[in-house]
Image (cartoon, rainbow over all chains, first blue to last red; front, side, top):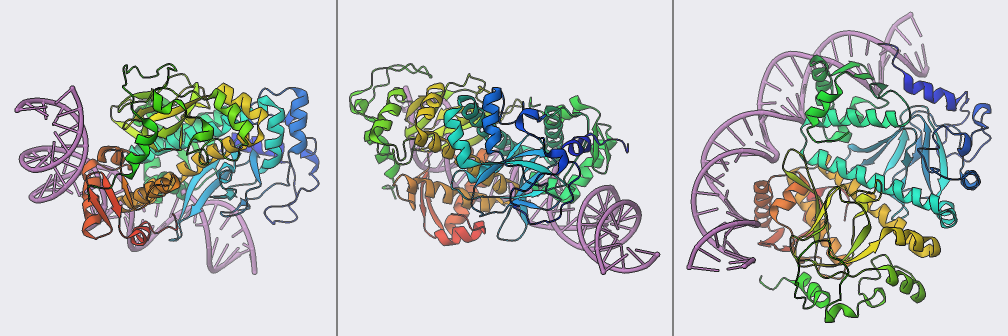
Amino acid sequence: MQSINNSTELNNSTLASSELQDNRSNAPVVKLCPHSAGVSCGSCRLNELCLPIALSEGEMQQLDDIVERNRPYKKADHLYRQHDEFRSIFAVRSGSFKTYVLSSSGSGRVTGFYLPGEIIGMDGIADRTHANSAVALEHASICEIPFSQLESLSLKLPSLQHNFFSILGAEITKDQKIHTILSSYSAEQRIASFLLGVSSRYARVGLSPTRFHLPMTRGDIGEYLGLTVETVSRLFTALQKKGLISVDNREIALLEKDELRAIVGADEF
Amino acid sequence: MQSINNSTELNNSTLASSELQDNRSNAPVVKLCPHSAGVSCGSCRLNELCLPIALSEGEMQQLDDIVERNRPYKKADHLYRQHDEFRSIFAVRSGSFKTYVLSSSGSGRVTGFYLPGEIIGMDGIADRTHANSAVALEHASICEIPFSQLESLSLKLPSLQHNFFSILGAEITKDQKIHTILSSYSAEQRIASFLLGVSSRYARVGLSPTRFHLPMTRGDIGEYLGLTVETVSRLFTALQKKGLISVDNREIALLEKDELRAIVGADEF
DNA sequence: AGCTTTGGTGACAGTTTGTCACCCCTCTCG
DNA sequence: CGAGAGGGGTGACAAACTGTCACCAAAGCT
């Protein structure tokens, strides 16, 4: 069971060496480390899942020109913090992030997880201020896209505008699905639904939908799903005992996807 | 207490007579009834809260040209249904709507309420299919904006593109706030938060933030907040007994907003 | 009028979760 | 290398917060 680490493969390939000399989050654009120097939207393996879908080569080049590829982030580095001024959206190139809010009454609440090929930061578009904080769950690299430049370019490239509308729409659809989950699903249904969701998101970027690594802690999952850590832990083992999944710490294998779907009940995934 | 009906004022003014000869939902564009015939974005009282924010007169005219003002909807009329092809987004001109999904296991779940000046239908942008159904909670009128035309026009009018990005972003921010509410708030906090939310949305369109009419049933509220009808009912009366609100059926008065905020705890609203 | 829908409440219970406690393991870092 | 922190797993316990069921009143349609 030690061998389930297809997500790290993906990380390594794009993350490369990276000595991480300095850790200030919100780093300026710096010289890229050797291995990622050649990275451009055109050569990025995720370009069919990200902003550039269906862009011509010329168009992709124009997008490329406004993308800033910052140095890698390491675990616990912040991409931005709640109340920060909104400047950019970010595409996850490798690694993963979580977004969270700190309820003034102390305990934070995780509002989302972001895997490779997904976009972070759209919570700041409306009032130009980030409503969440975003933090790396592991070594990760991102493409930063300054929003004002994205807007300008979207005026020139219909496909880009269209893609961005779609991405925003997808975020809305996703959030509304979670609304349903939180307002009516039992703890077991939430966990099953969560696992199936992660599975299909990994599948989207070409990784195994049945064996994967969870980048987040049980605590994160609990906050995200409105459960306590203990409940999350217990349900993981319960599902394992039922033979539906196999759990080795954060290495997960979905053994009986159909039965997981049956638990969720709805016709999702 | 019978006099709390400022929301109906707004309806009457734009809704007008309307004989409602035929009730097929998804009605074609028809001749407008006399009182709303003159309505255009330029003359609409909501134009500073809706898509046309900060558009010049000429720009607003162009937007106006693609807006379809259908005949009014009456209670229980559907704007669209789950799985319908996505064609347009809709701006609520008067009245109100709810969106919901039917969990294949029967019971529906309300995913949102939409008041005047708000936009419905963004759940269909991503995969060109509506993820929710939208239904009128009372007599209502809407402006339908065909999405493909909106996209085209957005390429020509930077302000329009900007506004639409903002509206999408606002929807995302809103949905994430509900995520937090559902994942960690108690029933009482949810109700308090809900009332404050409705209050500020009414305030936005110039209605009283302290005395308003709820267009939805207790059941709708319950489904939205993940509570049962009984719990909603009980909490309404409990809050009334505490003197924080006054309830007469769907007529609500917020008497002690600060205490409501204290219940919610977070620094919202 | 008479029906349906909505809203309000009481009594009751109960099941799923949270709480608390403790243990083990791994990793990091001084 | 050893200590400490953080993550993960479980058992015992309860417990309270809601949901369930039942019934009634009021309102609103036709």
